[in-house]
Image (cartoon, rainbow over all chains, first blue to last red; front, top):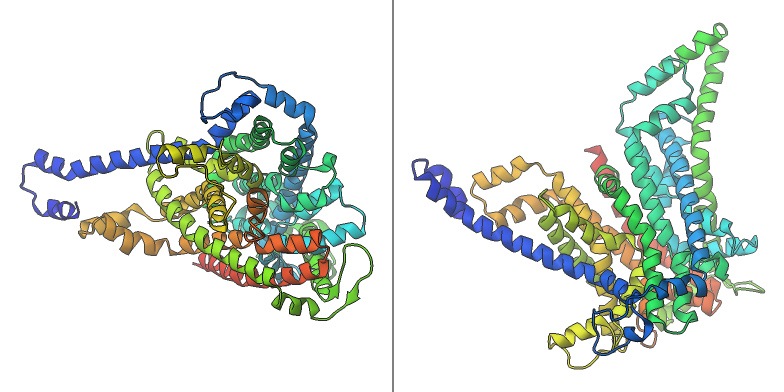
Length: 296
Length: 314
């Protein structure tokens, strides 16, 4: 294959059609193989989700029937209706939504302002602030669970939205991403606006933010997904059924209801559904976000 | 120069009193900068640095969940040295990391190569591979708990149909099988993200480079080894670091899938910190282990930051 690629240019007089065929045939074969592998892998990748969906639509006795089968003898949504009547999943949905939305808004807001200031402003203590942000990136939140729990316990805020929301807001990495993003934007627009008498606040809101739309949507989507999925901290800080978020609540479906397979899978499907939707809607931003921000 | 533009507009309105104006202007600008930074800084301070100091403080105490705390100096750190569970969990976490990281890198890179060209339908495949990344550790873990269910799980049925096993496998009965089950889940769930990182890394390599290589007579394999991989050095480094940090902090998947079974052999460090602090109520000891874990991870992340900064300065 490589020898063909090498020889072709040095034999300009050779009969073209046959030659090209020779060069291309391995390529066509190669591509077919690639396509086959991709399809096989994709099918494999779909199995866990498809199997969960399949189980969730079965009647409970059919989920433990042997031999194990994909066939659904009695198609039913009873697991889903049971989910909403027998568990607090409705409440967990609301909690997850409240927590994820507020954390996302606060994160985007605070991180973009800080990133803007660190990129565009000169002020005393700026190197110190920047160093603090960078240091924050290096501290894994999982390592802080013990003192953080103690902190919230001492002010009696365990099992409140405060505990669920506030510690998830500081995202030094988001500040870093925004700073880098603004560093890459031309400063002339700001200067022009300043000449026209715009305040820094107006510059940030009217020029900085709109310019940073791609960074904003990438940070927002990732923050939303991370917060919705975060397990460890909500698991520690929300022990009341009615304060749990979806990932934490899922565990009580498993242990609380005995083993009801269809119900478990229905809960898992319901828990993942909003994220899949967010992902499908924001797919472009995610891909561009990974390509265009500091994540690369 | 920003200052010049700013001052002109200010003086346009303020008129006289130049010197006083300049000083108050500087103060004002400093104030605005601080103002914009302060919300983020406040969050980082209250929820990163306060716990950080508290963690170190706690690690020097015997600190039960409720009741009296007492200063024991470095006692918790000394206890760690003679705690076999801590060392086992650290060893297990490192082993898990060493298994997961290369799989994620190789498979993620392979997938990126497979789906990188924009062809008809390729978006569908990218979506399929990336989708598990967004559904979360908890939900994904529960899917696999069901998938590996001995007897009525799909995995056992498939293995038996393929003739690999003859009877249901008790996936959580041995350390190796339990680890295998978790690795299976984590690869399924996170490799899409690695794929995405590699895709964007590959996009950063101009086509001319590959053309030049093929004109020079390099085959696919040589091009890959001599051209593509060296140019992807930074992406590879980043994916390695992300995979290592993520794996070193693993908790959710083990808590849900293996529950530490069998006999606490699949405890990760974070899991042992959790158990010590919130099951055994030794918060001081948990804090001391957190300090050690944090130091290990800070070293890893320092490398990450260094690499990211290197990239911007180019």
